[in-house]
Image (cartoon, rainbow, N blue to C red):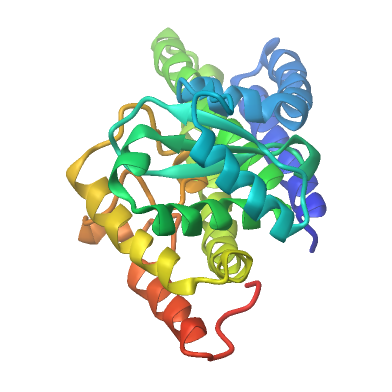
Amino acid sequence: MTNTLKTLFLLSLLASVLVGIGWALGGVWPWILGGLALAMNIGAYFWSDRIVLRMHGAQELTAAEAPRLHAMLEELSRKAEIPTPKLYRIADSTPNAFATGRDPAHGVVAVTDGIVQLLTERELRGVIAHELAHIKNRDILIATVGAVLAGAISHIASMAQWSAILGGASGDDEDEGGGAGALVLAFVAPFAAMLHQFAVSRAREFGADATGARIADDPEALASALLKLERGAALMPPAHATPATASLFIVNPLTAGERVARWFSTHPATADRVARLRALDRGGRGTGAA
């Protein structure tokens, strides 16, 4: 299934969850949440990148402000054979980066202050090549839409949960049944959104690692960067990242170093990623696009 079809499936799935919550709540809620689902789908498709950048307080970096990064981005974009994305800065000491945008013509690469300070120029080049690989592989639309809708549906489900709890005080059997159904949907909805992220993120990270290593022609640079970033994310918690947007980043900004949390990680284990990259560096066939 192509990423476009996956995106359409995701939009349909989360819209269905919203409508289901509306029917469970009864009254005018089906119409309210049905209309909201339509607005969310349109907004997520066309403006999800702007929403994600705003969620993280990202600001565009001009060539005058970051000439070295811009030169690196332009060079690697030519090698990747895609338009040069816009470059954004996130004022956060946690070392990390992500790509967003609905297609290569609207691509964006965002880097934190921490990653620029932590990595060598060679390692940073490997990271940027990885993010360009996401853009080249057209991963960014489904990942960004998933992040935005997962965050939105979590908030809506929380509202539905409280509505059901407060509405249950009426004592009416029918209201209690509807409230119970809404409670179930309210708890399930965030997990439905998260499960989608788990399904796509692990495969796309392996694919972007392999493609990025080929773009930069330096698998070891990305492998070294990933090891540093995992340690950095564990030592410096992020200021802006949320569970909904964690899947966008090159390393998970929220769960690095936590044994139980890794069971639910949106990323493959860093050790597995590094092993595959080093296999490429030794002349092995590597992973290809997973």
